[in-house]
Image (cartoon, rainbow, N blue to C red; front, top):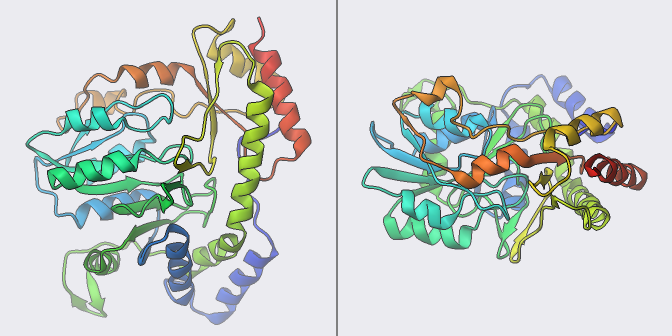
Length: 366
């Protein structure tokens, strides 16, 4: 089986973990600080604040924007459930703006239309490794005086007009096991605002600036040095790993370009894609259904995934939730019926990619 994702950590990570163990300091310490500094350099920001997971990063980013009951956060309906859960955990109301099919990210025009008198924050999701149209979204937030939180869980290193995803407002990242850069579990919040960075550091540490000096009602959102030690060696190799993902995506697109009924992902002008996922659409013009394609790929030993099978609010626990406003999202509703993600990770060999291409071509054939 060619898996949809692979987790491999090298000897450098192993050595750094052993160094932490032998140091006797395994909780948040110098390794976390080092990871934060190097991570900030990748994103191109002044500050990076490590936390224990990507969902926590979203919650903390919203919390330091001082949301009040009734405030609304407008986000994408095509995202992992953590995006919605974080809004609810922060005490806000979630509202949604439909996506564009060409980038799978929130449509700036739909986002503008969703802004109302109770809107407090815009939360675009940089999905699959390609950032949303921040050249349109950032000015929209500024014009309306709104907070901007970027859900950059899948898009570390992606850029918009040369500027890093996660550098336009408060950037939030996941370092979960399957991400392009992983600490097993972990998250990061990025910002150029020194005051917000300071508040985040206090918030993640039980509200303490110094031991037993409490300034706010805080949380235990700390990352450990053991986890940071896993991530630090990956930063040095990150550029090469992303290049391999780009090469794999280009090979997939070249091999699948003429398959009837298959819409391929693209890297849009002015944006760089880090290819966390390579997601195609099996359109209504295809001779077989999306689910039949998945079944055939599985039979041929090619891993694939549906990210995501429903709009994020289309579950019983959210459908009647008083703080979930589910406006129609026709583009998202079509995409969730058609999307399949194929292997594109940097551990694939050329022959693996060729095998994926051949399997997809056979799977989509009548």
